[in-house]
Length: 153
Image (cartoon, rainbow, N blue to C red; front, side, top):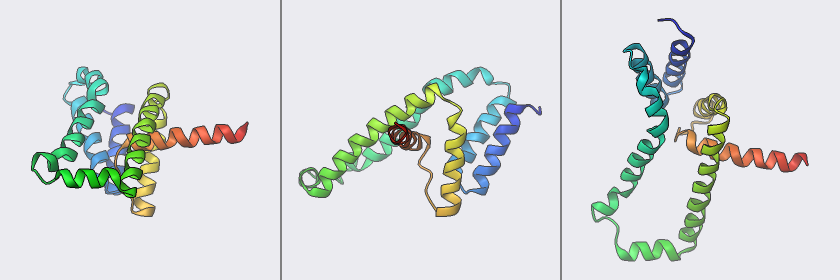
C-alpha cells in the first residue's frame, strides 16, 4: 500500500542505505515489514518498550568483558582512580543525565526525531561519523537547546 507512513519508511530505508547506516535502514525495514504484514497492532508496544529492549542489549554487550573475566579488580581500581577514569565517570554520568532529558524532550516533541535522523545522516556522510542512535543525539540536542535558550535571554 502506498500510504504516507509507508513512503516515509521507504525514504528512511533508502537514506539509511545511502548513508551506510545499517541501524536506520534495518529499523525502517523492520517497521515497514510490520506494517505490510498487517501487524501494526505491535507498533505501540515497540514504541513503548523499544528503547528499553535496545538499551538492554547495548548494556549486555558492554558488560560481556566482565562476564568473560577480562576485567580484573586492579583494572577497575585504576579506571576509577586515574584522571582519565574520573573524567570518564563524570562523562558517563553527564551523558546519562542528558540522554534522559533528551528522551523526555522527544516524548513531548516527537517531530524532532526527523531532524535527529537527518542530522545523523549528515554526520555520517559528511564527517564519517558513527550512528550510535537517537538517544545520544537527543541528549546533545537538549543541551544545545538549553544553551540557545540561555543565549536568547
